[in-house]
Image (cartoon, rainbow, N blue to C red):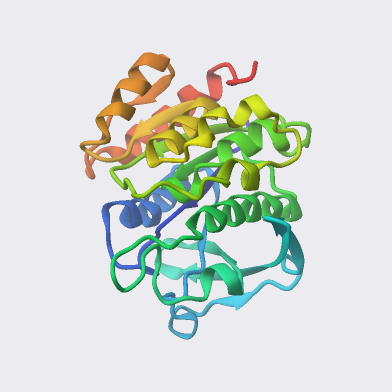
Length: 274
């Protein structure tokens, strides 16, 4: 029996960012799943606050060099990689001078969310998928953490579903208490449009609030995990109403075993587009 391949796409991973509930899961979960005999790959944005020298990041030339067009502008995709020796795992970083060179992560010095977080999300999601294509690595499950990853489920199910690498890929989306405000740019749906995506697929994104982009991610995912003890109440109700394969919040002592068992359940389930 082949090893299941799990792709982790995370908004935050420790030790590259300060410890948070999400960044600790981003660091510990892939290691724990790898130690259970699964094959893994892990991605995060290369925020400007990530110290390249201290963390020994280096560019992967064979994976870099592609341009992604967002809002009619070309944006070079740069891929870097670093190793967490203690975990025997690599982390791939999505980089771009326009979107990820600034020292702050998602907010400016005054605590306001960056106006281009919508485009940063689009670039990150598409950059991850294009890099996995270049790697020629076919994930059985993609597990997304954080709203910056929210377009991956729709892209995998609509834009890349005819690519043999992703034909049988299941998507798991973790919902955290990482609400943001105000909403994304009103043109977000138009900017996010990509191959195979139809007008009706983007209806909910016409009002691109945190709640709506998360609902869209849930809609296109095969399964959902409550990643925080308490999540947005509207989303909590939405997950229950959708009657989708889901997992309740797991404590830091139990989540690796629980997620591993849940992945097995997801792999045996019907695909969301079946």
